[in-house]
Length: 412
Image (cartoon, rainbow, N blue to C red; front, side):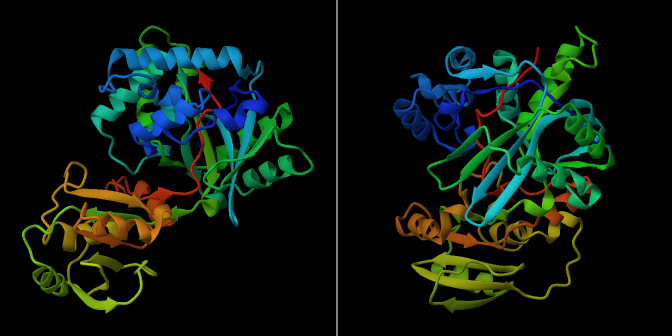
């Protein structure tokens, strides 16, 4: 049973929503964030990535977290409004012909601990500590956890959310520079809130699509505060989330680039790869069109790699993912990429940046080879989470991405 809770959000005044809304803190470099806040002092990056405001090269400096709290309080006083009553909210993102409509609410820390909220990613200690300190400094969830549920478990949730948008003007309706339209509605009907809360009781599990570190950090803060406050209704027992039906979510490919060929020549690499894949030279960029087929860009040429039949039996469900196959059949045994979480010879390129970005990085000499792959599916993600397994790093790239700053959840 999924437990959800309405909350009283801090959110932008309508005329400032477009200025405040910012990309997630972890998709921009420090230089990109500094440029963004320099041109727009209302950007929520000043809260979620406050080092952009400072000259310190240490993103874990105490001053960074203090500046996050200072900037949040400044925005709250000047350009944001505080709802006085707990509401649910609808957040819709439109990118071309892709529309996804989610509910903004609070999910339960205890359900993360019990496994109702399921994870598929292994968190890094440094990033988890960073977000924990950020929550403690701001006393708030400033970025939402991106959750999914199986629509078949409770079809009425999506139907109710859709009905709430009909003939009702959104409180926010703006386009971001990346071509995505963001719309928000407030659900202020106590009856509708109760109906939706009850509807989620039919949902056996929620799945983290993105935000593993933020969710783990929220749990850390809650457990620490519980030592001094046993009140189960305290706000710190819940974390701000946006929940979407699985049928509306879009996972794009998450491609790989490597810095060198592990001492191999071009011909030696092709020979080694041909032992495990059927290799064909292609005249056009190879964006993978099906599972177990990869593109490889090398020496200004594209190759199509199709996995040969193998007698190897997957040890676990996550071994069937294309990201695992590429790692286990090519990147590790041939190019010597051991743990892609920490290996400095590999980098990752989200599918939204296209095949041109892969060519650019290789042609510039920055990287030696690039690999494109077929996207992980939502059913694969949920099945692996149900099995209690962890997916390889950088297995999913969700588009469109949620904007931060449209909602803040105070922890009390």
